[in-house]
Length: 138
Image 1 (cartoon, rainbow, N blue to C red):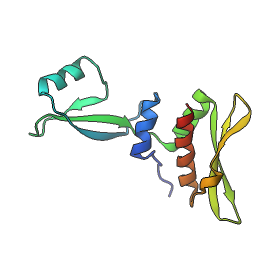
Image 2: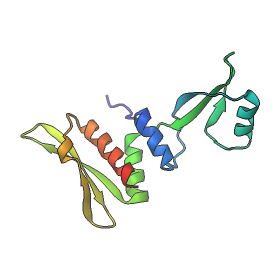
Image 3: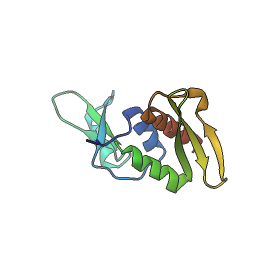
Image 4: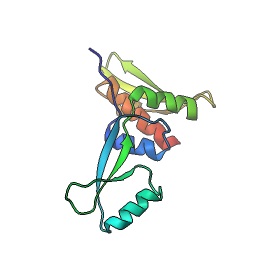
């Protein structure tokens, strides 16, 4: 049975910082420790300073969390391809039994990065490493 493959939390934060624009029903909550009062938290939320910032009341002083999109790997690859014209391509070496990635730039019709020096043990590891490297390029 195939399962939904989500981007890991650390990579999801980087993707959202690059303005990933898909609205997903799947979110990662990230709980923050804040040192200012509840009234300031409510003002930040009310004024829309951070639309992903939320206050929750569980009898803990200054309880705040921020939501990050939890997108599927395939949607991130499509976003990189359509918005930034970057293709993350995975290759397999039968002799080494390892996987690595290439990043292709559709605008320049060339390979701009390859992960040959950091072979991975699985296709998914190479895919995530390629996505992380592509994010560094934008």
